[in-house]
Each structure stands twice: as C-alpha cells, then as structure tokens.
Image (cartoon, rainbow, N blue to C red; front, side, top):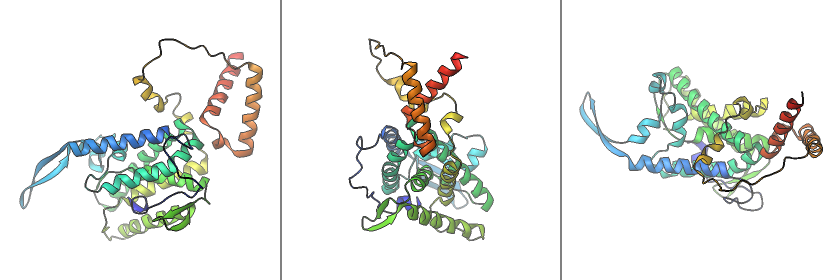
Length: 305
C-alpha cells in the first residue's frame, strides 16, 4: 500500500481528470474494472475455513478467489507462477481504502502515461511491473526469512508513478488535497518510506506494519530501468496484443468497410515526419497510431526487397 494507499492526491493541471475525457483511458479503465470485479468476487466467495494449530482448531474467514490468486511465495516456488501477476488484481477485502487509493492513483497517473506510451505498450508495462514487483517480493521474503501473502495493485501502480514522475517531474499534486508537491518529490518520498523498513528487516528487525514494501520497490525499480533504458516491451513480446483480447467478445459488423491503403508517397512523407519527431523528442513521444504507421512502412519496405 505505502504512500499510494495513504495519501489523498490530486493533479494540478488546470482541470480535473475524467474518465473518457482528456486522455485516452481505455486500458486504464479496463484495469480498474478488472480490479473491481475481482474485488467483488473476493467478497462473494468468502468462506469459513478450519485450521489445526498447536492450540487447537481455529476457524477463519477466507476468500476462495483470493486463495487462488494471492501472492504466496511458497506456492509460487511450488509451481503456481500465475500468482506473480494475479495478486495485483486482488485487494484487502477488510480495508476498502486499499483498492480505492490504488485505483485512484492508477486513474490519476495511468491515463496520461498510457497516452504517452500507447495502449499496447502501457498494458505490457503494467503487467510486467506487477510480475517483477511480485518476484521482488518473493526474493526479499526469502532473503530475510519471512513469509507473507500479498495482494494489491500497488507494485504495478508504483511503476506507473515512476514513469509519470520521470516524464513530468514538475507536475504538482496535492497531498490530502492541501499540500502542493512536485510529483518527482512524491515519488522520492514514497521510495524512502518503503526502503527504510526494508533496511530494518535486513538488519534483523521485523516489520511492524502490513505493507508490502518490497513489492513497491520492485515496481519502482522496474519503472526506473524502463525509462532509463528506453525499453519497448510491445516489440519484445512480438505481435501478440493483449489489448485485443476484449475484441473477441465484440459483435462483428455484418458489412465490411473497405479502407484504401495509404498511398506510398503519403506514407513516405508521414514516415519522414515521424522519424523527425523521434529524433527531436525520443521514441516514447510516438502515439500508438504513429507506431503502427512506422510498422506498416517497415512491412512495405521489406516486401519491396
């Protein structure tokens, strides 16, 4: 949870951020909906489970869905590797603010980061951040000899915050709606708040809170390396597009609309413009549509040979 689940934050860009307005937030909204759906399923599948302990049988309330999806390092090492991602779609059902703050920060920062990266790249980034944040948790728990069951999107959200802070460091958010603070400083304070208890654990002092600090740091570290090395995950994973999964369930039109291909001359002119944009502002300044134009141009040039 960390700072992402403790502070009231808002963006200071002149106008409020709304769903469906300003930036293209389709993937962000899809992620938020997925988290809410899983959260509801966690609640609806609560059950009473009896455990045998040295003091006798103890009965606890437990979610069936959460028992399948939560990050449990022991079970991951036994082969249940899906938990390294699925935990990021679960939240603490006894603390409603856990999911509310994570989803609020995802909406606040994620929509703009998605606009910068493109929908496909943003989704790959988010899922990879969740995966590596989960792996960092398992590794750190093994290092300090502790064992935690972790749920929450804050590891992936921490990665999004770092990308936002490194891209727009001077943007001002308001903590508790009152205290103005540059985003780069918010990210720095969040990192310190997570690093300090981790150092305490490494020194042999157990953590007194229930916050998965290693998960946050794992997400932050990936976000930093992603920006520093200018990684392109969509290209790394090939042609598979996770954003297209939802299209399977869409009703297909009865008529096909013919759209003529861009004439070669116009395509070459457009490619020249985009290459200049990359040279001036970097590859990350391209939108998803512009990336697709460059990919189409590349395909045409290969076919000529």
